[in-house]
Image (cartoon, rainbow, N blue to C red; front, side, top):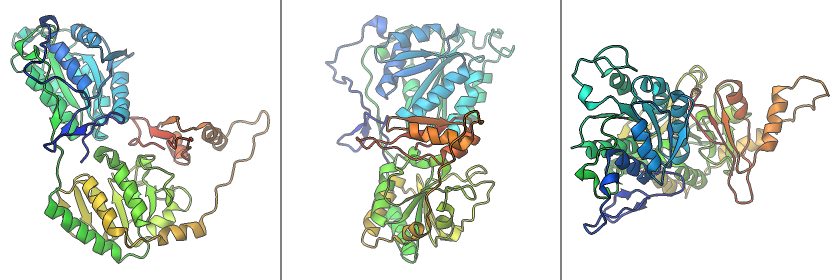
Length: 463
């Protein structure tokens, strides 16, 4: 699995098979030490964020995190983006993680933490590595039986932590400096590895204190990517090839977990090698290029794009990669899909029909391996059938002067505005339904416009 962070600066593989992050740090014993004034917990956290690809931190100042924000501002590689409220900061970090690979927000204790919680829960459901940094109470206040402001009025300061536990994959509360560097590093590494949010609370009196563990530049992150079981991978490929070889008109459907597994290119490779017709779930719109030669649209049950539902639901086999089947993506569970006909590929497992599930099989390895195996027996039947029944969508009538603006006319104009540099954010509801009909627009460079839903709606995609 590709554990690279960011969409531009990809990590480079090193000799031992690990993945190194983009930034290069001096790790030699001869490397210059950091001046004691900069060898602080706050500076260490800032350097670590830069190392994993964060250049913007979305923050709301508060008295518990003011000193920490000063250290973030002092880091040349970071820009502090002040937000009107914590929920805005959390959703900004959510969007940043979608675009860059990892996002960060910084808020104050409890009053800020509880406010940002909804955005963090959304990032958890969307498998987004968002690092939520909270300025916590003074380390000397823990166990003092004191009541602090910005709390729920109890001397128990764990209320915020308990709220974050169900919606983050790792939580740390830093109240001393001896193991602070280890706790910061473990939290950030866990966010990257699990592609989920993490919670880091730092006592407000520790942000600016130097410690020997911060005097040297930190060792760069090297996160070992999860590896497929070769035996399981071969078994999954054998079973899938046998399953698909019996199909007359197979199709492929892309799901939103393609982004989590970072396999859009592998999915496109399989689509090209197999000849299968290709559709996307609504929550995966834009994760695969709509310019693929056999792209047939968005599969969304009864509200699919024209002629797409007929091809998918009449297929005698469908390979669905990275799906999330919920009430919204399945139109109230009204999909007419038969599990016996499906190969379901998740980031780390493959299920073939009603048969066995193969675990420890990484999606990227599986899709790439399958592309090699099916390339000798391309099957374009489903797409050939689609071309026979497809009728281009008509254009809405022009509006008369003074006539109320119609939705279909509005989206006609939005379509005309899209270029290869466009990004469209669609909130759940009418906007999301109509954005499914928008088409990618290519520039001379071949890049396509993108669209995504808002965090409170369905999972994001790009068109």
